[in-house]
Length: 406
Image (cartoon, rainbow, N blue to C red; front, side, top):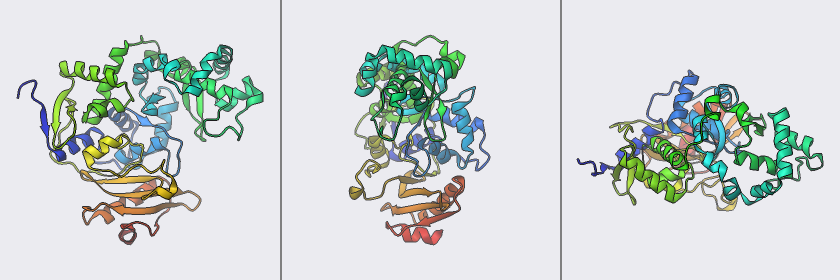
């Protein structure tokens, strides 16, 4: 094979590469998870998307469970809020936890706050006196929640119940602008999931904060390479979406990395577009996966990739009006070996100590062992969440068989 010949992968082989790159197919430690294993998983997948929805568990907690099994979530809390920080928060694939070194690669995005931030947030850039008052208070007293900063800087506009959704008071908007532009950062989250704002020099490790800002071209090269490592194999669209990068600059970065041998051209059976393979990607001949994946898991949050790789055309229904949902609000696909074989709509009934399966659906080609395998996975998840029971509601073509196995 010449240097220009693409690596050819069948559909099943590409699925195995993608799953292995995301940390699947290895034996889970089951209750003996260490910080070293947490760190290895973070290094492998590159980011954890954050979302406020807590119907099952916080979004950033679930990917580690899917890959490692039951683990102490206090380890992740420590990694993101206690020195030496292994994770910091910024806009990557939406709001995300990323390693501190990756935070540095996103400084070009911080420099573009006046162009790229939401319009309501950009408006705060036109209020320099408010910005300086807010950053001075954070510097004096941080880490602080937005409500605490507002009470001290602008007590007439405290965060009250009428400030719902994106209807933010001036101080909250100023904090979001400062966060986007990198002048403040997050020192962690409260138990109510409120961001705690602080100065970057008090949060970021010295080696990161004091390091020079990479050229935009070098930073995007670095982000594409992180994305490629996390994907194993993917199209240009896949690699770009992981950090929501500009299309033209991503294309240029892919070309540079390919010229240096840091990406290999690939052809995947029946794929609609050329693909790229990370040169260090594992290409296992066999791989067993058994995992429930949250809607915001890095393996599935890009819908086009999910369709191309796993033939999955079921939309994420969390943003779909209730009357139009088929599967339910918080639906998790169930992977078994290389395929999605079922999906379940899950909810933690914390008051009743029950993991509710509000609907359960099998894929048309699901193997016969799926009800038993899924039941075992649900019991494992319930135990991790501190829930005593799994209860299946009578909705979906898998519900009866699943309940029988529980």
